[in-house]
Length: 385
Image 1 (cartoon, rainbow, N blue to C red):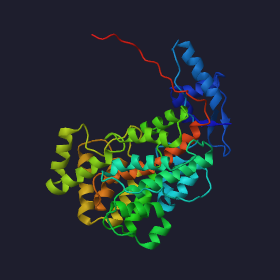
Image 2: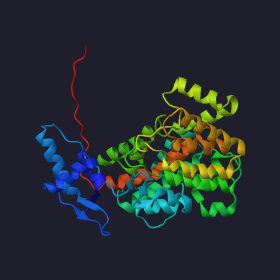
Image 3: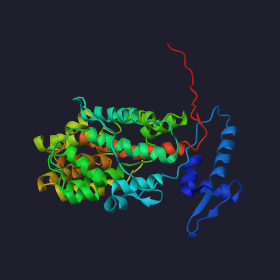
């Protein structure tokens, strides 16, 4: 039976941990020991029953869907995929292998759909085009069996990469064999897809696969709840991730580094504060003490960047710390990676989006196990002036 750890049970109930333990002592919840004997676990159905009881007592009308997932858990030391730390996977495992782990799927081919002539449009516009082409060439796109959905996911990722305009030469054969998708993507985005850059792109892609119920992921789950096919559901995610506050945040971080190189870090940060509440790439609603994913990307950047580029990144972080600004996040690391790799400012958004397809497909599969059309919020009507 699905179980929640203490922190997750308390968060679901909207209470603090001491209150959760008080519920146990009063007999409102039953605490179970984890197999290793180190943690307390709570049955999901018991927690949900108590949630309903609490809401009923407050006479709250309507009930939003509860999303219980076995895919990703957010922790202070970094997120996990099915219990495996994403940070460790990013340093050692190919994007394809982590995708199979995330989907609980057997390895399979990552074949792109035939594209034909691709219109001369921007990188971001080529991604939904690739999904439409992949959908149009799939004769059984409405097949919602897990194996078929996974095949569609691989097809969409590969077609997205193939739809991008090429910039540099093909990557080194060894890196292309070890990290096929990352190697192909690096060759599309960078003028010099060196082995260090291919490894960095692979690490970024692994870290970006999923981050629990981000806005775009929730959009995909809503579409899946209506039983949209996987291609249409992912188009809902693509429309949501396009915003500058979500998938496009790394572009602003890249441009911050461009400004720092031109005008100096102090001027760049001051200009960013003038036009934004925070410099791009700083602050995170989950990681108040710092985004643990950033360190992985900065290590990758250190392997491929010049000392001058590293100095710019370090100076910006130190200046932000001196001014007691929030801690830097993954978007700064992704922006630094694309800046150091000679990519366009939009490349981070492209890496983010293609990587997140794997997460969206995983959540799509999970949502198919729930009752359909379960997302139904209620509005509070207020008359206009």
